[in-house]
Amino acid sequence: MKPLLRTLPLAALLLPSIALADDLNGANTAWILTATALVLFMTLPGLSLFYGGLVRTKNVLSVLMQCFAIACIASLIWFAFGYSLAFSEGNMIIGDLSKAFFNGMGKNSMSGDIPEPLFAMFQMTFVIITPALIVGAFAERMKFSSVLISTVLWIPLVYAPVCHWVWGGGWLASQFGVLDFAGGTVVHITAGVAALVTALMIGNRNGFPHTPMPPHNMTMTVTGAGMLWVGWFGFNAGSALSAGGDAAMAMLVTHISAAAGSLAWMTIEWLKFGKPSVLGIVTGMVAGLGTITPASGFVGPGGALVIGITAGVVCFYATQLIKRKLVIDDSLDVFPVHGVGGILGTMLAGVFASTSIGAFSGHGFADGIETMGAQVWSQFVGVITTIVFTAVMTYIIIKVTGWITGGIRVDKDEETQGLDLVLHDEAGYKL
Image (cartoon, rainbow, N blue to C red; front, side, top):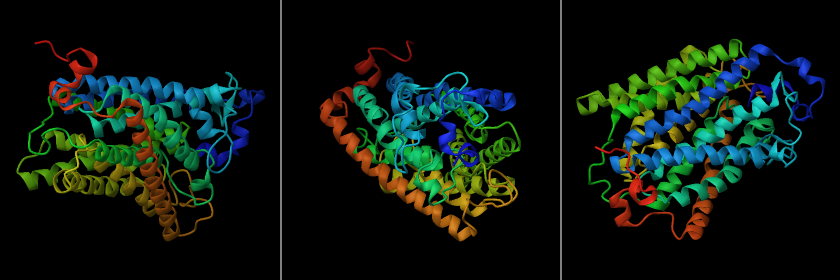
């Protein structure tokens, strides 16, 4: 639940442009402008390069293309009706269309003490990266048309409702007190569960798991990972919607968790396989970042350290379970890293919520919740609801997409040739 929605009634945030411009906080506005750019930087180019380096040479452009196209599509859907469905008043389940096409939003419209156009743009960067994360599950085998259609359906049918439930005045936050500072449920669980469902429905890549499919360019992946780390400060610290102590603490705990997750994953890999890998340390970083995200506004450095270490350990073994035991080809480990990390972080937010840090300073838990047990139960309700809703809706969306496109997957020969040439008539490298 965003600080915005804790300080002002939702209806007040959605009033048309009036004399509220006098309430503009220049420092907060400057910080959220910066944070917005950082979050977009996470997808373009951060996530694009991170994923691009992990696939084979013949598919690198297809991944970059998918991330770029999703950024464009998500932006326009958010403008048309996504923002309104997520953040207009509506009801406890979904917003209405009073804000469609940013209706009534002018340069003097305010959302708290920052301009509403800035708040809408900041939230737009979240809806950009969430479906882009899912790309990692079906990399190297989905039709480009299927990617586009499924994204168009997924944003209003999955992302917008969950966003409204948690951040837009909906039932999970207002009635159950679910804590999610920056996207454990809204971003990571929805993306992770959608990734797992899609991977199961599309099937494994030809040759998986017997044919080696190593990353083609780890330098590209590490470069993208570094961009993700930097951009994540906008993701988490920006969610304070202010340039103050909450943002500073969110940034600090984000960094600590990322470092702890990296080293935890690296250490386990070193002990288990005899050598620490570059892929392992950067994947552990992503696990640490994803897991701290829902808790970043509620925990202190000590809690962040525990969360980061736990993320590195749990997400490592989740990856081994999905790939090696269950033989599910979630190609770039979206569910075991983002899905499991989001679940873990959302639950641990209830455990480590501090009475002296973050958005509920002096209380620790959500309004109306007095004990850790009650808060953990609320977190559990949020997690289970998000998992079930996302899984069911994603299954329906993939089925509909397959019906529209004549199957969501390229054929075997096209997959062997590579999506770069087959779908885009281009090659990533001309050597």
